Length: 113
Image (cartoon, rainbow, N blue to C red):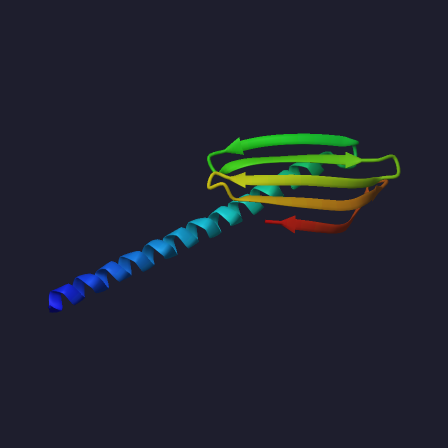
């Protein structure tokens, strides 16, 4: 009888640890997707002062990232970047601002998991 209770306890512990592992994998996937989206936005903004538009895409073993930057004649710009982890988690970053000469001002950003 005691051995049956022992094995039931071990079974519950295994079930609990598998749920914790799945939650940790999802969390890691969200962090990777957000990091990829942030990196894509930074790459798209690299030539913000000298270029009116830029499109980038890249991928590696952690996932894919893409971004598009558009700047109009008045200097207002909009960057839309996305990241997708290999765990199928996705994130998106949008950056709005303006460029005056060589001065850059970010008005606001939006992050969507």
